[in-house]
Image 1 (cartoon, helix red, strand yellow):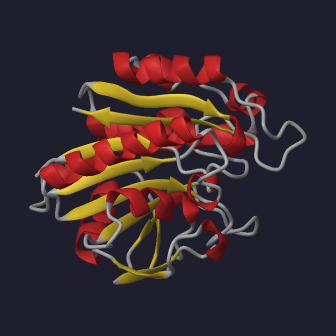
Image 2 (cartoon, rainbow, N blue to C red; image 1 turned 120 degrees about the horizontal axis):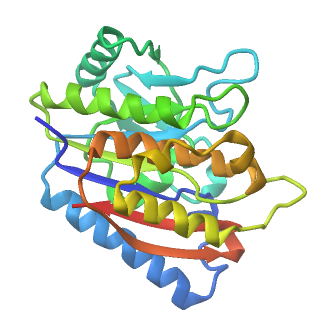
Length: 269
Protein backbone atom coordinates (compact mmCIF):
# COMPACT_ATOMS: atom_id res chain seq x y z
CA UNK A 1 0.00 0.00 0.00
CA UNK A 2 1.39 3.46 -0.80
CA UNK A 3 1.99 5.93 1.98
CA UNK A 4 -1.13 7.28 3.66
CA UNK A 5 0.40 10.44 5.17
CA UNK A 6 3.46 12.59 4.47
CA UNK A 7 4.99 15.70 5.97
CA UNK A 8 8.33 17.46 6.22
CA UNK A 9 9.23 19.23 9.45
CA UNK A 10 11.99 21.14 11.20
CA UNK A 11 13.61 19.34 14.13
CA UNK A 12 16.00 21.82 15.73
CA UNK A 13 16.50 20.86 19.41
CA UNK A 14 15.35 24.22 20.74
CA UNK A 15 11.80 23.39 19.70
CA UNK A 16 11.52 21.43 22.93
CA UNK A 17 14.66 22.35 24.87
CA UNK A 18 14.07 26.11 24.72
CA UNK A 19 10.36 26.14 24.02
CA UNK A 20 9.75 29.45 25.78
CA UNK A 21 12.62 31.31 24.13
CA UNK A 22 10.80 32.69 21.03
CA UNK A 23 7.95 35.18 21.27
CA UNK A 24 4.90 33.36 22.63
CA UNK A 25 2.74 34.03 19.57
CA UNK A 26 5.41 32.69 17.21
CA UNK A 27 5.89 29.55 19.26
CA UNK A 28 2.14 28.96 19.39
CA UNK A 29 1.82 29.33 15.61
CA UNK A 30 4.54 26.75 15.14
CA UNK A 31 3.11 24.35 17.70
CA UNK A 32 -0.35 24.76 16.14
CA UNK A 33 1.11 23.66 12.82
CA UNK A 34 2.44 20.50 14.45
CA UNK A 35 -1.03 19.96 16.00
CA UNK A 36 -2.53 20.15 12.51
CA UNK A 37 -0.08 17.55 11.25
CA UNK A 38 -0.73 15.23 14.19
CA UNK A 39 -4.47 15.34 13.53
CA UNK A 40 -3.94 14.53 9.86
CA UNK A 41 -1.58 11.69 10.70
CA UNK A 42 -4.00 9.96 13.04
CA UNK A 43 -6.91 10.50 10.65
CA UNK A 44 -4.88 8.55 8.07
CA UNK A 45 -4.71 5.55 10.45
CA UNK A 46 -1.10 4.53 9.76
CA UNK A 47 0.43 1.29 11.00
CA UNK A 48 4.03 2.52 10.95
CA UNK A 49 6.04 5.74 10.63
CA UNK A 50 8.98 5.81 8.24
CA UNK A 51 11.00 8.80 9.43
CA UNK A 52 13.81 10.20 7.30
CA UNK A 53 16.23 12.27 9.35
CA UNK A 54 19.86 13.31 9.48
CA UNK A 55 22.87 12.05 11.38
CA UNK A 56 24.28 14.16 14.26
CA UNK A 57 27.13 11.82 15.27
CA UNK A 58 24.71 9.85 17.44
CA UNK A 59 25.42 6.56 15.64
CA UNK A 60 28.11 7.19 13.03
CA UNK A 61 31.29 9.24 13.04
CA UNK A 62 34.02 10.35 10.66
CA UNK A 63 35.55 6.85 10.56
CA UNK A 64 32.34 5.35 9.11
CA UNK A 65 29.62 7.59 7.72
CA UNK A 66 27.16 5.88 5.37
CA UNK A 67 25.25 7.94 2.83
CA UNK A 68 22.03 6.23 3.93
CA UNK A 69 21.35 3.82 6.80
CA UNK A 70 18.04 2.18 7.65
CA UNK A 71 17.22 0.83 11.09
CA UNK A 72 16.39 -2.87 11.43
CA UNK A 73 15.84 -3.01 15.19
CA UNK A 74 12.90 -4.30 17.20
CA UNK A 75 13.10 -1.15 19.35
CA UNK A 76 15.07 2.08 19.63
CA UNK A 77 16.18 4.14 22.62
CA UNK A 78 15.89 7.90 22.59
CA UNK A 79 16.33 10.70 22.77
CA UNK A 80 19.98 10.37 23.67
CA UNK A 81 20.01 14.03 24.76
CA UNK A 82 18.20 14.39 28.11
CA UNK A 83 18.35 18.18 27.82
CA UNK A 84 15.84 18.30 24.95
CA UNK A 85 13.15 17.79 27.59
CA UNK A 86 11.55 14.72 26.06
CA UNK A 87 11.19 11.67 28.29
CA UNK A 88 13.78 9.05 27.43
CA UNK A 89 12.55 5.58 26.63
CA UNK A 90 12.03 2.98 23.93
CA UNK A 91 10.12 3.21 20.66
CA UNK A 92 9.08 0.05 18.83
CA UNK A 93 10.59 -0.72 15.44
CA UNK A 94 9.16 -2.47 12.39
CA UNK A 95 11.97 -4.74 11.15
CA UNK A 96 9.66 -6.51 8.67
CA UNK A 97 8.86 -3.31 6.79
CA UNK A 98 12.46 -2.14 7.10
CA UNK A 99 13.70 -5.41 5.63
CA UNK A 100 11.38 -5.14 2.66
CA UNK A 101 12.43 -1.56 1.98
CA UNK A 102 16.08 -2.57 2.18
CA UNK A 103 15.57 -5.52 -0.17
CA UNK A 104 13.77 -3.36 -2.74
CA UNK A 105 16.48 -0.69 -2.60
CA UNK A 106 19.18 -3.26 -3.29
CA UNK A 107 17.14 -4.74 -6.15
CA UNK A 108 16.87 -1.26 -7.67
CA UNK A 109 20.59 -0.51 -7.36
CA UNK A 110 20.55 1.56 -4.17
CA UNK A 111 22.76 -0.18 -1.62
CA UNK A 112 21.68 1.27 1.72
CA UNK A 113 23.60 0.56 4.87
CA UNK A 114 21.57 -1.02 7.65
CA UNK A 115 21.86 -1.16 11.41
CA UNK A 116 20.36 -3.57 13.91
CA UNK A 117 21.09 -1.00 16.62
CA UNK A 118 20.37 2.72 16.34
CA UNK A 119 19.94 5.39 18.96
CA UNK A 120 17.45 8.16 18.27
CA UNK A 121 18.44 11.77 18.83
CA UNK A 122 16.51 15.04 18.59
CA UNK A 123 16.39 14.71 14.81
CA UNK A 124 13.80 11.97 15.17
CA UNK A 125 12.45 12.42 18.68
CA UNK A 126 11.45 16.10 18.31
CA UNK A 127 8.99 15.29 15.47
CA UNK A 128 7.74 12.14 17.20
CA UNK A 129 7.10 14.08 20.41
CA UNK A 130 4.49 16.08 18.50
CA UNK A 131 3.15 13.53 16.03
CA UNK A 132 3.07 10.44 18.27
CA UNK A 133 3.75 11.62 21.83
CA UNK A 134 2.68 8.32 23.40
CA UNK A 135 4.93 6.29 21.07
CA UNK A 136 2.04 4.16 19.95
CA UNK A 137 3.30 3.49 16.42
CA UNK A 138 6.42 1.54 15.43
CA UNK A 139 9.02 3.47 13.49
CA UNK A 140 11.51 2.77 10.73
CA UNK A 141 14.35 5.32 11.00
CA UNK A 142 16.18 6.16 7.78
CA UNK A 143 19.31 8.22 8.41
CA UNK A 144 20.79 10.43 5.69
CA UNK A 145 24.32 11.78 5.90
CA UNK A 146 23.88 15.56 6.03
CA UNK A 147 26.84 16.00 8.36
CA UNK A 148 30.16 15.46 6.62
CA UNK A 149 31.57 15.16 3.10
CA UNK A 150 31.06 13.34 0.88
CA UNK A 151 27.26 13.51 1.08
CA UNK A 152 24.71 11.98 -1.29
CA UNK A 153 23.61 14.40 -3.97
CA UNK A 154 20.11 15.84 -3.97
CA UNK A 155 19.47 13.80 -7.12
CA UNK A 156 20.45 10.60 -5.33
CA UNK A 157 18.18 11.48 -2.41
CA UNK A 158 15.27 12.04 -4.78
CA UNK A 159 16.01 8.74 -6.52
CA UNK A 160 15.96 6.99 -3.15
CA UNK A 161 12.54 8.50 -2.50
CA UNK A 162 11.21 7.14 -5.79
CA UNK A 163 12.48 3.64 -4.95
CA UNK A 164 10.92 3.84 -1.48
CA UNK A 165 7.60 4.83 -3.04
CA UNK A 166 7.63 1.70 -5.19
CA UNK A 167 8.57 -0.43 -2.21
CA UNK A 168 5.72 0.96 -0.11
CA UNK A 169 3.20 0.23 -2.85
CA UNK A 170 4.04 -3.48 -2.66
CA UNK A 171 3.64 -3.70 1.13
CA UNK A 172 0.43 -4.11 3.11
CA UNK A 173 1.42 -1.62 5.83
CA UNK A 174 -0.30 1.75 6.01
CA UNK A 175 2.79 3.93 6.26
CA UNK A 176 3.18 7.55 7.30
CA UNK A 177 6.38 9.12 5.98
CA UNK A 178 8.01 12.02 7.82
CA UNK A 179 11.08 13.96 6.72
CA UNK A 180 12.87 15.90 9.45
CA UNK A 181 15.58 18.53 9.27
CA UNK A 182 16.53 22.13 8.50
CA UNK A 183 15.85 24.50 7.02
CA UNK A 184 18.68 27.08 6.91
CA UNK A 185 20.81 27.09 10.04
CA UNK A 186 24.47 27.10 11.04
CA UNK A 187 24.84 25.28 14.36
CA UNK A 188 28.15 25.88 16.10
CA UNK A 189 29.67 27.82 13.21
CA UNK A 190 31.07 31.34 13.14
CA UNK A 191 27.84 32.31 11.37
CA UNK A 192 25.67 30.63 14.02
CA UNK A 193 22.29 32.31 14.17
CA UNK A 194 22.23 33.27 10.50
CA UNK A 195 18.95 32.34 8.81
CA UNK A 196 18.50 32.71 5.05
CA UNK A 197 14.73 33.22 4.84
CA UNK A 198 14.91 34.00 1.12
CA UNK A 199 16.51 30.63 0.42
CA UNK A 200 14.06 28.83 2.70
CA UNK A 201 11.01 30.35 1.03
CA UNK A 202 12.40 29.60 -2.43
CA UNK A 203 13.02 25.96 -1.45
CA UNK A 204 9.49 25.60 -0.05
CA UNK A 205 8.08 27.07 -3.27
CA UNK A 206 10.03 24.47 -5.26
CA UNK A 207 8.42 21.73 -3.17
CA UNK A 208 4.96 23.23 -3.54
CA UNK A 209 5.29 23.55 -7.32
CA UNK A 210 6.88 20.13 -7.72
CA UNK A 211 9.93 21.58 -9.46
CA UNK A 212 12.13 18.48 -9.35
CA UNK A 213 14.84 20.00 -11.55
CA UNK A 214 15.29 22.84 -9.05
CA UNK A 215 15.19 20.51 -6.04
CA UNK A 216 17.98 18.29 -7.31
CA UNK A 217 20.12 21.20 -8.52
CA UNK A 218 21.11 22.47 -5.06
CA UNK A 219 24.88 22.14 -4.69
CA UNK A 220 26.88 21.55 -1.55
CA UNK A 221 28.63 24.87 -2.03
CA UNK A 222 25.37 26.81 -2.22
CA UNK A 223 23.94 25.07 0.84
CA UNK A 224 27.10 25.61 2.86
CA UNK A 225 26.77 29.36 2.29
CA UNK A 226 23.49 29.18 4.26
CA UNK A 227 25.06 27.18 7.09
CA UNK A 228 26.13 23.54 7.32
CA UNK A 229 22.78 22.59 8.87
CA UNK A 230 21.10 23.51 5.60
CA UNK A 231 22.43 20.26 4.13
CA UNK A 232 19.46 18.67 5.92
CA UNK A 233 17.17 19.63 3.04
CA UNK A 234 18.28 16.23 1.72
CA UNK A 235 15.63 14.60 3.90
CA UNK A 236 12.95 16.87 2.43
CA UNK A 237 14.12 16.08 -1.11
CA UNK A 238 13.98 12.36 -0.31
CA UNK A 239 10.36 12.69 0.79
CA UNK A 240 9.55 14.71 -2.33
CA UNK A 241 10.67 11.65 -4.27
CA UNK A 242 8.35 9.42 -2.24
CA UNK A 243 5.45 11.85 -2.72
CA UNK A 244 6.08 12.06 -6.49
CA UNK A 245 3.83 14.92 -7.46
CA UNK A 246 1.44 14.95 -4.50
CA UNK A 247 0.40 18.51 -3.70
CA UNK A 248 2.57 20.07 -1.00
CA UNK A 249 1.35 22.88 1.23
CA UNK A 250 3.48 24.93 3.62
CA UNK A 251 1.70 24.96 6.97
CA UNK A 252 4.26 27.17 8.70
CA UNK A 253 7.42 29.04 7.86
CA UNK A 254 9.15 31.66 9.94
CA UNK A 255 12.76 32.36 10.86
CA UNK A 256 12.89 31.60 14.60
CA UNK A 257 15.83 33.64 15.83
CA UNK A 258 15.89 32.11 19.30
CA UNK A 259 16.19 28.64 17.77
CA UNK A 260 18.69 29.92 15.16
CA UNK A 261 16.78 28.12 12.41
CA UNK A 262 14.41 28.75 9.55
CA UNK A 263 11.55 26.58 10.84
CA UNK A 264 9.01 25.07 8.49
CA UNK A 265 6.22 22.50 8.38
CA UNK A 266 5.06 21.10 5.03
CA UNK A 267 2.08 18.81 4.45
CA UNK A 268 1.44 16.61 1.39
CA UNK A 269 -2.23 16.24 0.50
